[in-house]
Amino acid sequence: MTQPLEIATRLVEMVGDRAEAEAQVGSGVEALTRFANSFIHQNVAEDTPAVGLKLAVDGKVASGTTNRTDDESLSRLVEETLEAASLQPVDPEWPGLTPPSDVPDVDHWDQATADADPDARAAVVEQFVAAGPGMRAAGYCDTAAMRVAFANSAGHAVEGRTTRATVDGIHQTDESAGSAHQTGGSIGMLDGAAAGSLAAERAKMGMNAYDIKPGDYEVVLSPECAATILTFLAFYGFNGKAVIEGQSFVDLGKQQFDETVEVWDDATGDGSIGLPFDLEGTPKGRVDLIAGGVSKSVVHDRRTAKAAGVESTGHSIPGSATYGAFPSDMVMGDGDESPDDMIAAVDRGLYVATFNYCRILDPKSQVVTGLTRNGTFMIENGKITGAVTNMRFTQSFVEALGPGRVLGLGNDRRFGDGEFGAGLVRAPSLRLASWHFTGGAEG
Image (cartoon, rainbow, N blue to C red; front, side, top):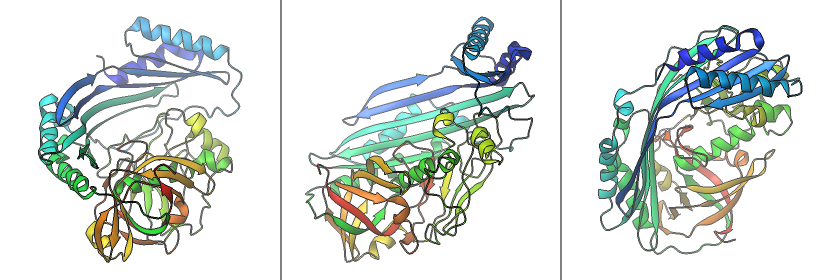
């Protein structure tokens, strides 16, 4: 296949002076090894280019896509998108094109991950499965290596590349399950044995689970739970569109969180797996969202930046015209306590390994309802004393992280598998003063 930047540039040239044009082209391989009942049962890989074109003709905007890169297919995409634009009403919020600008010189790429074959992923799976003898293991190991390019008719052209690897799975007994997750920029960062051991330990501890009364409990939450919390805060709060529309809880300059809470978004930092530019070609950099518990910034694409009278922060994503900009490379500041240290400090509370099926009830207050899953344990006198059945919670995520409510930050920051996927958030375990549980999984 021709290089993505050449294709993007060629698309823009085909449009010529008939429209404002921006082209995005991605290519690479996404491969998955899936296992169930402790056996690998599926190996799949996809190597299909993705070509997107957006055109604005006198303020009338339309988009089109194709997975073919020959000249005939690209020409057809141009003509069809031009025709679609001619049928649209004028978009008064069209922000125009990103001007030529430099992007950060970062390269989140690992060649071994780009070259990873089924045997390489199977080795990680084998370690995961072997860590839970006598149990049933299920999950996946996947790798991705993507090259992405952007070009527009304003003369702006950029390209970048990134790799990612993930192992995610459970170990099961006849009455319990325990999960574990790891994501990194390279397959060499995955430790299948460690992930499998954690899942197996949680499954063993999860046997003989019992019901407890609903109510407010002190909690220690895993990085998976923390990642879900931050994703909701990002999508419904630190989102320029939500702020403009008055739907966000964010009150810039106000102490809305505990002073220990630090959250930023940075696709260019060490450990990130993001690209250094967004869907509109805007360069990315570090954006501090929360500093010392104070809400500092929200993220924008070009559309919301125009409405707010500010510059885009480089956070356009597919669908952002509808949903708004999204910080997809978030990091939460960590602490110096291990999860065991935090558990030891709890007189009576709960350890929660995973949230599941979380849904927003009120974006303005960030009240979310959801369930616990694959590892919920009673803590008494600083020790885990047994497993409890899955529980439903209804909790304001902003209130949970509010002043005086964060009792501890873990030293175990990593990519957490949040409600909406892996690779978006790096967060530590959290010890929080209170979490409101409203009933069992069926209530």
